[in-house]
Image (cartoon, rainbow, N blue to C red; front, side, top):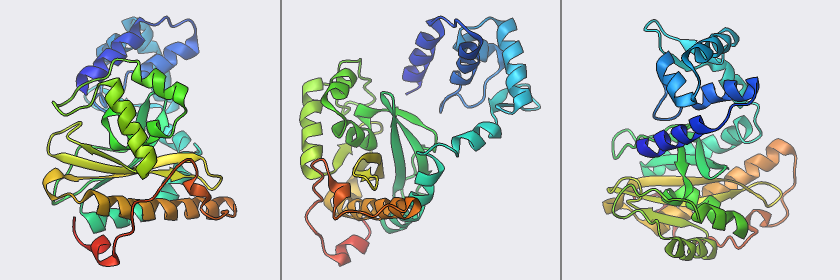
Length: 290
């Protein structure tokens, strides 16, 4: 993942920065899940800006609150951006609707739970709850991952339009483990399976001990709002049980979103687009540890 982010940053640095807004965004774009704290020289290198220009822009961003400077002279993202991010329709409202359901999934599965939305050709986690005792992962809110290698990403890609899918699959696809699927034809078959079953299962795509199950989350109007997933050790996973639990949580999140907006759900509208919940499992299985 570090190589991918570095490559992305280097490519971004080579792009022309024609105006002041572009240069400011280049400074912010230098930061990422694996680059949360940067020195001025690192910001300059990753943004493709001269040291003097980076220094001036960083000073402006610190004054406004977009960046913060620690006693060691390094910089990190400031809380002012968190305030703005909370205003995003896919930000605070979605997290507020989803968190009780995600917390319940976390306790029932003892797994790592993620809420992801599509941003360009990536999935971004807007909420993440880590397992403390069983099998914690490093996924955090704000992390950005390629869609082909994550459960949430596969779900979001499966329900995207065909043109977007082909664009995503035509790009270089990073391999993280020997199990990471990077063949476009194999991925197309997997996306078709996701649409047919209503959930994605991915084994060892980022780290070998992990299995992830993910399902779509629909908004009150039937559109795709997000995807949720549970990550557990592959050796103890029961994918169909996890899929059923996720499906129930997804429906509850949709109902909570509808309550927030005052929108009345029409039947099973949130299952539009070929979403077929997995076969019902007994309540006893759903509450059992996976």
